Image (tube, rainbow, N blue to C red; front, side, top):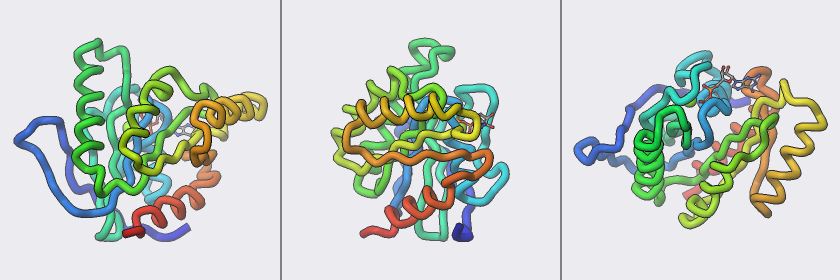
Length: 195
Ligand SMILES: Nc1nc2c(ncn2[C@@H]2O[C@H](COP(=O)(O)OP(=O)(O)O)[C@@H](O)[C@H]2O)c(=O)[nH]1
Ligand SMILES: [Mg+2]
């Protein structure tokens, strides 16, 4: 796995006065809360806790941007659709995600949709898919937490992912034991290196 130079750059909330603009190629991580988005980013970066992880779902409520190799940006978006926040909060987070993706779409080279490999794709992933497809940006589905998923469940999750998101790129990973993380890192660094 390549050594990555990484630092925290900024956090964005969805308020007009905080509009931030930079012309750097980006990778954006989306997915439900608690699937391991932040943990995967740390694993890719080779860091323990640069990206804040939480056992309490729904913690990240801003877009957190990390500068990678001084050239690229990796973005941790808040977990979409977490019912605990109530309808209003849910709408706010979805607005942040759509605002972010719309605003930065010329620079986004890959949208990584993280899914818990034990649970498989959920209703919210299914609902998010047509929305994400509209941007015509390359998507990558990552089934994470394979270290704790039984082979049988993993096979089922993979089948469902292939069926629901037909033709899309899919990878399996574990942020905990780093299985296939070097591969994911390679795919993402290649994506941002494109013009
Ligand atoms: N077993 C296992 N646990 C993981 C993995 N990735 C993340 N977790 C755990 O899942 C919880 C949520 O992780 P986090 O990265 O904060 O998820 P996020 O909300 O999607 O950013 C934390 O307790 C992590 O330690 C993994 O690959 N395997
Ligand atoms: Mg997170």
